[in-house]
Image 1 (cartoon, rainbow, N blue to C red):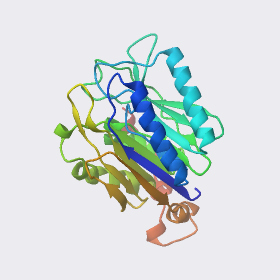
Image 2: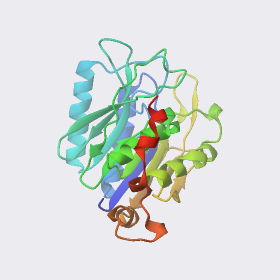
Image 3: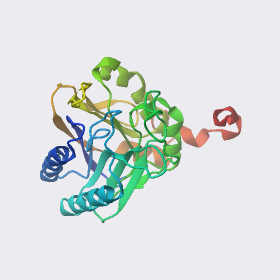
Image 4: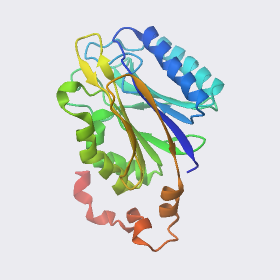
Length: 274
């Protein structure tokens, strides 16, 4: 991993107001460019607003989004991670992420683990890909998915340096900071990865209020930076790769830099796959 500057956004995204949401997204991309950011991550369904009353982007609209974010990624030399609702010609839509890198490449991640209230309205993705950026290898886990430690482990085994965890968590689910601090540090520590979390904020136009929140943790589970100011905002964080690189080089016998994953015994973990 190289030194990587990231930006996390907490923003209000209105359902059915895609163009308005895109204008706000472009503003934050430009702000990130001014701050020499390598990767910017927006919350779950930032383009479309999160709601069970979905307005999915169909094939032509997805192509338009690809072109738009491809242009922004190249013009501003930034990797953009942005959530939207993707139409599915054979079934219910996906909760998806578009990943645009400065070299013109476009990738997608589709939420693979759906919450109880989502299964009726959305389709599940069936892959856990990781993505190469100019400075690091990254993974994406969307909201509910962060409660499944196996996803983080699989991504770590595939070599991710940073796991971005975008949320659409409403106020009614509880204090987001308190909840995140219960388990996101474990995801970081157990897998020797940076964790970067962001959440929708404000009202989605359908009556649901989101609590916001931004948080970044280092590969030892320590809090680097956070923002829970209850307002739309962007958080800039420079990630120093020295710790993660020291651990993964495996040339230091200190327990402080022990890479525990090299001491796993997968033959004992068969029950996990059942």
